[in-house]
Length: 56
Image (cartoon, rainbow, N blue to C red; front, top):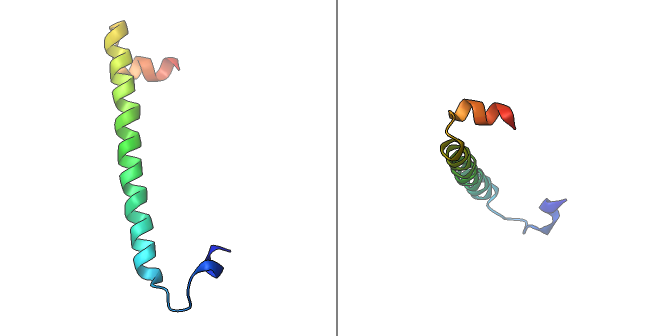
């Protein structure tokens, strides 16, 4: 469906690389957010990160 909005000579290869790169960057940022939150919670309660992740 989204392909119908593209021009006929659109550079699909470049768009695919851009989407893949942005997906990678988003995943790395999300990983930093999640694991820094786990680390902060673990430090606050004085337990290892593995216990915090198990506990929910």
